[in-house]
Amino acid sequence: MTARLGGKGGGIMGKPNPQIANAVALAEKKFDLRTRRSREIHQRVQSMIPGGSPNGLFIDYPTPYPVYMDHGDGCWIWDADGNRYFDLVAGDWALPLGHRNPVVSSSIAAQLAKGTTWGGPDAELTFQVATLIQQRIPSMQRMRFTTSATEAVMQCMRLARTHTGRPKIAKMRGAFHGLYDIPLVGNGRYPDAGYAPPGLPDGTVQSTVLLEYNDSKNSVQAIDAEADKLAAVIVEPINATNGMIPATREFLQTLREATQRRGIVLIFDETVTFPVSDHGGQGLYGVTPDLTTLGKVVGGGLPLGVFGGREEIMNLVDPAIHAPNRPPVDHVSTFAGMPICLAASVATMQELTSDAHQHLQDLGEYLRQGVSALAAELQVPLQATGTGLLFGLHWTPNRVVDIQTARTSNRDALYALNRHMYNAGYYMFPKGIGIVSTPMQTADLDQFFAALEGAIVESGLRSV
Ligand SMILES: Cc1ncc(COP(=O)(O)O)c(C=O)c1O
Image (cartoon, rainbow, N blue to C red; front, side, top):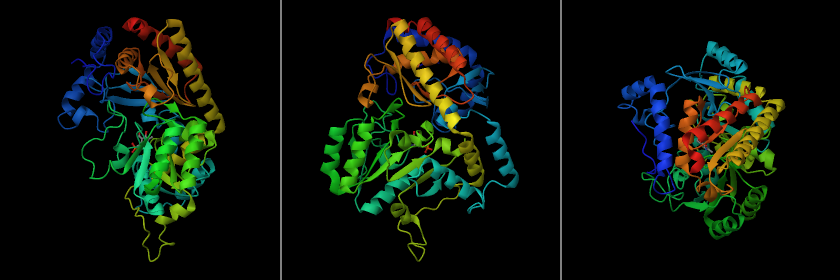
């Protein structure tokens, strides 16, 4: 099985470059030999599970089959063939403490011994999680739990519409906020960053306003033009899916002012950015939204999402305020905030101390600077963006500062690099985004740089 480059979901630079195609072919021969068991598993699974991946990850590039994983420990993960990888994926960025953190694991085990779910609130954990979240994100004056960030985003959009009585939601062109209807418009997984996939209810596209990330002037114009109809603006402080691109402070402040002026709800999707500081992305930037969504890290490796924010808006789900038991916004869910997930959440937030955050920040900076130094030395158009623990690799001569510049990155080249890095024992997303985790040390990253250099040289990407 070989990968096809340059097609849908592959390169965005037109036809595949023959040097890149060669680089991929070279890596895939070795990859094929190293991952025979994964290939066998894939053949067994794929007739029942499209793409072989039950959550859809690791298959949206020309990957012939995903690597099927077996177990993890700290910053390492092992596949079905017994290959060990340095894990820069960390559970789709959910595990900044790495796999099987002892405190998190024993907290889950202790809760498992008591039971996994009650169908109602837990005596201790509900209060503990809410308190720990509020200490980190004080703007979450009231909050509710979900099983995923997708649902948290969905709830915020309904809250915003109910609160304002307006129908539309503005999002950034190319941003991903999960699988609810409006976030799927222009979600960045397609060659056209504004593309709306099929299957959305009538009116979804018309209810969506696309803004340009880090473009204050055009965003304010669009917000002003749509103000009477606009319920909310949703934005990530650091755009994850397009390559961990930090917002400028000026952009977030401008969105804050423009939304406040027009009575529009500002939602920060902090699903990915929650661990960039002790106080999330909003603490880092000093900009306070009306509502916030959390996911991934907040669940400590188990499924948990959270939405919350200004009391006045969150009261819309409170049955005590909207008697008789009829809050205007429905929120009921079987598994939302299960005690087993809350136990993992408490342990994770307690383990993510200020020292841990500093370590992650230092590692992230070390990685970004090391990649830049290597790129300069090898004279290749590789660069690393990101903040704190988050990093994104881009293969483009343009400095990546927004989604448009990120989309000039040669994804085929990144894919070729990724295949070579797999063979060298590095587990990364094919499009080059990832996180560092607390079990890592700078010496591990020195090895990563050496492997990256090897991959660039061996693959022939130097001359692309
Ligand atoms: C910024 C952002 N928001 C929302 C989501 C959806 O999260 P979930 O997969 O928990 O529904 C994701 C998932 O990657 C995300 O990156």
